Image 1: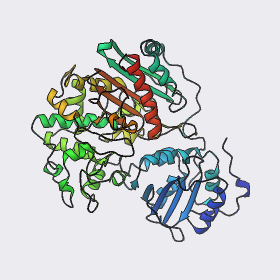
Image 2: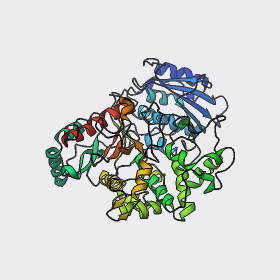
Image 3: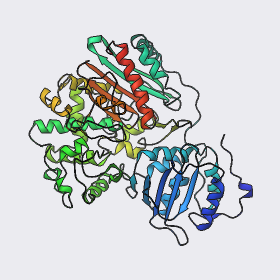
Image 4: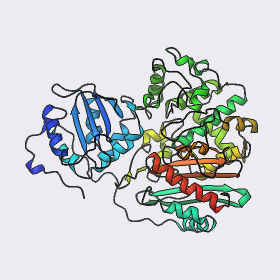
Length: 539
């Protein structure tokens, strides 16, 4: 249980980031061990620091113990994360509620560089404050807004019972895929509160959709719930580009600036659609210009891309530079420029409808969001020995109603399965043809080979991850039994979806507990391998 701050014996309160405040912070947190070699380093540059306050500081965050260390001055080495932000936002980052931290990324005034994935785990450390040290420091800091509710915005809830039709689906799934359901349910309460799974393998006579656990505190996960797809959304956007390619409206090897003239100058004009789709641009992931503004208004994001800087001497094709946000924002701009429809409308009409994805939303309108907001599945930060933390990431009104191309599509896993099933059928969906068979083959073939990274990424198609288990265990994307023709995508350590042409298998899995890469790969491989074993495809 978190200890309460010793407010009765606080004495003098100190201004945030003043010399006295740093001394106080050291006193408060020194009782907690901090491994500085493995701690996440966070640099803050404060653009309007008041007189007497440091305008640069480094925070070391030990994600194992919850310890923090604060040091005035710029970092001596490259930090894991580097924020440039106003003083008020720095205050919110450290002492605000979890939903307030999430909303820092929505106006467009925050700049962030580094490994964004660690933001989620830093956020959990600050939200949970398991030792009470941060609350103690807050009580010793002068001129802060009213203290946030320490219990957080999530009410305590009793275990929820799913509707009978969901329980029936679980029973059917246990009968059809016993190993799979055992592996999936083993993760409940350990790495995830809930999950959704879709499996289709016509040769084996199995097609099923199932949901288990909670989608958010007190709300059962159902087969109709709308989890966020994260980067699995990118595959849908890639198919949109493929349709334009078929019509002769775009050439993947052509420069983006040929279709979006404002993306020109300072080396931007050399970036091609092919580089965006294969994540081989000269812009490192850590320098994604939309890191701090991924949910900002579109005009703000467009201006950030118009003025983005290409690192000196950086060349395309030399390394994997995964583009979480900016690449698909540009692809969305290309779709709008050459077709005339918005990206959201184009996807809905030209991809979702033919694939029969009737319950999927590229973006929610305000009315729809407000009707379903209390039922939308939440991402929970899990693993590491701390309780799973429900969060507002990508669940606020702004981040659900502003299109974030390649990231914030929402819908049940059965719809994502229908998408990959359409591609497995050569591009023919229940509502019409999405791509020609030869275009499906071209987009899911290996376009990037010989490059790997520390996140298990290896061979890639045009917007699709391609099974690379032949390169080693760490590059196994979908299953140890998957054929090397298997293609699909990951969803930021929560989801995986793929189609295996040789097994005629489609699988889509969402776990609403976000863990680090190694844990996510372990659990997804356990589930996906079990599917192959249950279906007799592991021989």
